[in-house]
Image 1 (cartoon, one colour):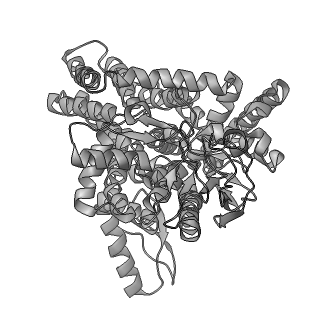
Image 2 (cartoon, rainbow, N blue to C red):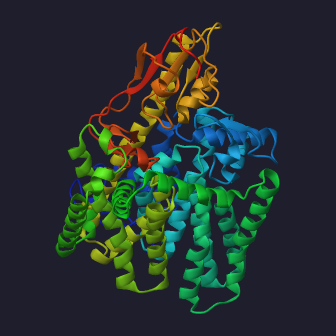
Length: 596
């Protein structure tokens, strides 16, 4: 790797683009000699301290959102963490109303509990507030970025660019601002790959043992971490050419999962890993995705979540490849239109602008094709174990999201981004030699554009969570009193804040409504049941609304956005008119209506 201390070129006249060796990226320097010296010192410091540079970058983009309210499945992880804080050996030993009736928690969650243990530990240091728990989850985001840089040093000559490309993706920023398990799992995942690659290269069995431990931790954080076992096993066979002692360390996560299964069987009389697989099979059958629709939505989610690959398209592909990419996109669109797959996508009947949503699906599906093409063409050109590792990483994650997960969502696409960042830089290095003007005038604008898009998506997600909390506060302030109860349907962050403010989740199996009670039903939520069907004829007394982003949504059924679950929208995020977050309030409860 070139030294970051390479001497600067002479400055001509009053201004000249000086080239430093931070990823070989030219930077403009101020005109005065004092300004030039100050700028060069700072830039050299960044070049000599890459981990500090990445730390500052991560903190700079995430710090404005650390006050984000809890939303989506965050409450499930918080409740388990609170249970762990009191009863560490029984993480799922309580009941919760998460589907309009009460179930044991182990029957609701489909993730192992390690992230909740980490959450409880973080709460011990920072408290249970929004900013405290988001601060605790800042460390996994940093670990992913550091690990991507460390891995990229083995795979390409501009590791900083690879790490920043992974950072400036919508899925990375949005996932970093939850307290769910995804970013922590990815941190273990990336460092498992790093130590496995380094351990095989140097026959360092200490690093291989550490990689086995990280594989086990990733699997106990999210079940998808188990995919590291075949992925790294295949890389070991390709790089070594034969089985060896290194394969022993693949047994570490296998043994860990066996112990976990035995423990959950003892505690809850169920094998929770198998239960998660059964739930996936049930949900996919319930929603009835066709294979064509699943591939299309998975392509759209991949392209949108890793949008940096779309922004860099003019630099990544030459004219013949762009023509082929356009032809593939047209083919996918025509197949979908011809088979009617688009009409069967989740939420199609609720779209306010179906033409606009369909165009965005096609655009981001082209981006998904682009991401897969980066992996496949890298194998074609290089034909080595490293290119196969990256290709299996990307294609395997895509296949899992499209065909095996209970739904397609951004959280499932998240593991793609470290490999995608490395593949992007490898492709740029093959297209442009060092010193080519593309590095001066192309890379930096594309990186800035990617960062702007990712920040806009993160802001839209933040504003939606803020609107949900604001609605909960407004409802409880207006309708809660000592003589009556405020009931609500819906879950996610709405349930968390409604219960925190004293409201009660409606149990449709045993509704306890009485005269004078209030029922709140959020329109942009899940597991809703019509009050007219379940609870008698009710007349809405009012609608509580709160503003959110007006032109961009991450989770809105009317806009076609379903970042956290594609069954509510076929896009990871959607541009267009976004209505405010609304809750219909039925109040007061009619005295003559029977409880049903």
